[in-house]
Amino acid sequence: MPPKLEFAIAVRFFAALAVIALVLVALRLGLRPFGRPFSRRSPLVQIIETRFLPGGASLHVVAVTGRCFLIGRGAQVALLAEIVPDDVRRASSPR
Image (cartoon, rainbow, N blue to C red; front, side):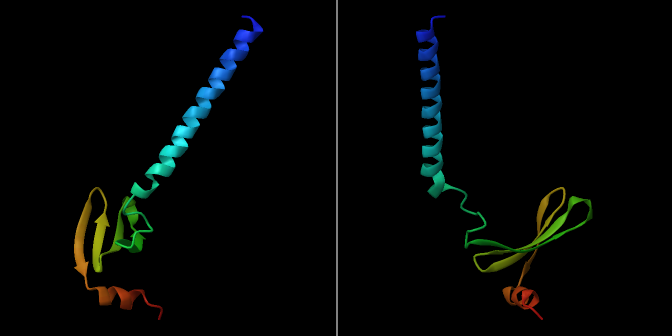
């Protein structure tokens, strides 16, 4: 191949990579406001405490819009109980 043709192919290749990188950055920045609504920063859902159990199971105390729930996770996820929020605050406060 002539050197000019190799240079033209290299320029096209790097231009295409630059366009793809710009599109990915634009998508990431553009979709950020629509991102995970229940992320750790969300005030609606808070994981208050997690206890890991043998066999890959775990218990989670979760607060959702002021209500507290005990959730179990093993082979499936299950709502075990609704907990009174005052009991959760009292149990999690330092003694």
